[in-house]
Image (cartoon, rainbow, N blue to C red):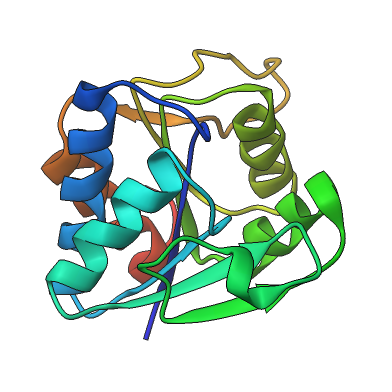
Length: 159
């Protein structure tokens, strides 16, 4: 069983929401557990996609009330950590898919890379690591490509 995090902004347009929903569906179809911040926007769209495909969604919430997550969560962990919960999301995931994003997304990407976790990007931040670092974001063009890349990285390691 693999844990794939989907991260992105709490607000997004319809096109990004559709991509996130497709990513969530793809993760669930493969039998993965979708991990997210449990809120609105990209998180909610990915959660909706996973649940529509019969998948499990774990929300790592910033607040203290597990009932404050989006309605598609299967399980919710109320951390009370605020934005620091981004480290919990990154640590929990076997791989991370960033869809669009805000500054919180950038922190999740950086934390995951620091932890040696594979990060796949879909219409997200374009950053290049210094030469001494050999891993960065694996950028994809479609939701299907992103899910495939994250699944491959989670199950077999970086390629």
